[in-house]
Length: 150
Image (tube, rainbow, N blue to C red):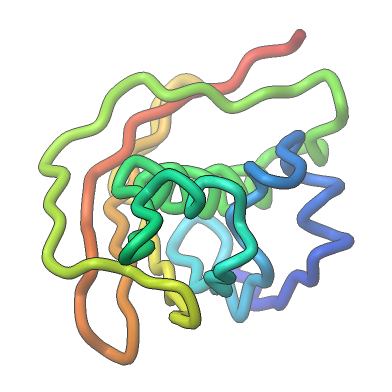
């Protein structure tokens, strides 16, 4: 059975343990459990890393784009769990493959993050993800991760 939904920031905070400045998903526009998810990240010049990356021409760090893809992937994975994740569950990277950066993301941009599940076996997920701005690909990667109780 598939399910399509939206998630707001309050629901996301119940799923992910991340908080400002490291919660990198602002809203889930739609998802289909075990299949795909679309989310957005509004990029603001007020984010603290822009003070040093780079002061004269702020650029959203590529590793944080990968983190946003990973967070979107974890959100989708959490929707398929028998029980919703609580404060005692944390999703962890197991690998990143095929990471590519195509264009910079700057303050004022809205990143559309799209992920799709490509594999799942024994608490290990593999997702293919991409981040775009105004329909233009900014970055893509395959993300491998698991979760653990803490």
